[in-house]
Length: 147
Image (cartoon, rainbow, N blue to C red; front, side, top):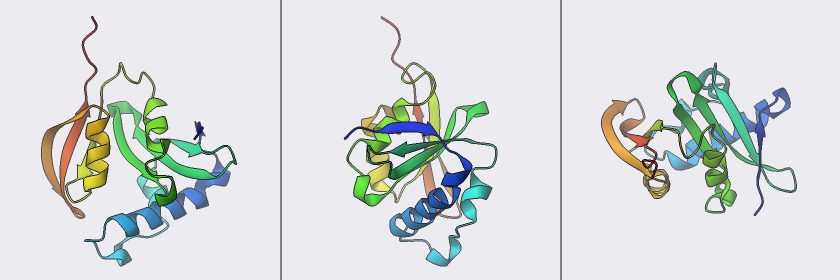
């Protein structure tokens, strides 16, 4: 598939909030789904750079949210029907300086598919911690040294 990556705009907010809510409820099955709310998207992305991934038909497949000051990928969410079709890869590749720039993120240990995705894209486990949604691993993308 061909993906278009663009900055989010105010018209996207409700749809991105719906994606964030539905994917978290479907993925984080070990967390009480009542703890997730549509309003979380605005609160959790406040101050972050959000990019949208859409298909050729204009349908939004997902988004990435980055805290630019720390090169921290806070969120990458793809609707289930688009997972495994390159949308997540397109979002990673849209990051400033990718793949020559170092990025990091936290991935819940129970989110095995996400961890496999990041490891397949060159991230490595560099730390561990705990959050209200469960234990996580910090993953870092360190570019290969220039030859």
